[in-house]
Amino acid sequence: MKKLLFIFSILFIKFSSIYSQNFTFISGKIIDANTKKSVAGVYVGIPAKGASTSAIGVTTNDSGEFILKYPVLLQNTGSLIITKMNFKDIRKSLLEFKVKKDSLTFEIQSVEKKTIDSRDGRKTIDYIVSRLEKNHNANPYFLQGFYRESLFVDSGFVKISEGILKVEKYPFPDKGNIGEVAKLLKGRSYEKVEGKEVWENLQFGNGADLVSRTLETKTPDFLDKATLKNYKYQIEPELQEYDGMPVFSISFSSIDRKLKGAKTGNMQVDTLTMGILRYEYEFTPDGLKDVMGGSAFGGSKNARVTNFKVIQNYHAALNNYYLNESVLIIEAIIKQDNVEIPARLTLNFSPTEANSRMGLAIKDNEILENTNFPTGGKKYDDNFWGNFNFIKPTNILRQIIK
Image 1 (tube, rainbow, N blue to C red):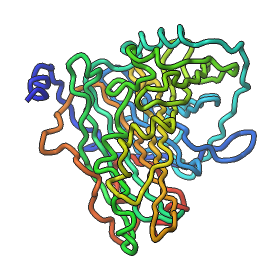
Image 2 (cartoon, rainbow, N blue to C red):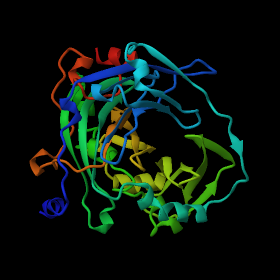
Image 3 (cartoon, rainbow, N blue to C red):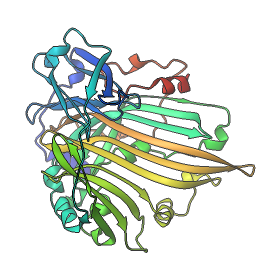
Image 4 (tube, one colour):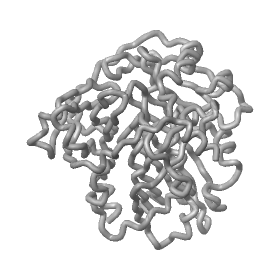
């Protein structure tokens, strides 16, 4: 009910989804200009023009490959940006790709890193935290993106779920907002049948809910004013670069042995805006025990979690910083007939569209409650996604699913 009251208090601006329009595409590969090796995690997108439009983009897969679908109406006026931290940006007009659209190769040039004096980073962190609401959208908005959940046991694939999610964001819940809810627009899954009794509990009921959370809807404790005192921060001597600007690298670790869910990690911060571009952390051994609550992974008595890692990347769009990629990795040991078997669950959410306008809200009966998506059958077909953008599967992934 609280959600409905909040929604109706907002002035809605109705809009037609871009997915009802005619689409075109460009696809190809990103490589390092110096090493000629493929580059994963590169953002390839079309920046928004004005606060009332969408930013569209995808990230390259582990082989540096991508396919970007966009409305034909952007062909004559839109521009393409290719960006990744510690590489020089590439910006081009979409008109350049009106004829040649497929099997493109872009070479991105790495930048030379600079050094500074290492120093205590607490005052810098205080300022970063004070600017969170300025650097991130404080108004309700939508993210649409591609979700992939993969479970491997003893280095072998046992389950992969994929889906297009629409995530409705209500930032900064401490101000009375509700956080976020997600809806599945389209999804499929593949799994092995044999040996399922060993791994079927090794998964979250709704991993998509965890990995789609962002700084402004679930601020981690190392960026929370109330718990900053529990961590130490150090500005590292090596400057990185993003969008032509120097970037601080700040490491952090807990100093309170009694801190629940203690973490250790690092973050990258734009020195111009003090906006967070990336953070990565793992739970300490004691923090891991707190997170799992002393219980086994997924309710399985035979599984023990050994590592829990979180990575989030952000990029500039619509005058704010928006989630670019979110990854959650859980490693565990399964004990079966006195044999220890390693397992790894990876959750990945890659937003492909950020829209600052409010449209039709997600209804209560549409909220995603689990990631048990319909079976994808025997055929692994990219055409399944239609005009939705997705992360292109690598050849290795295709072979795994086959």
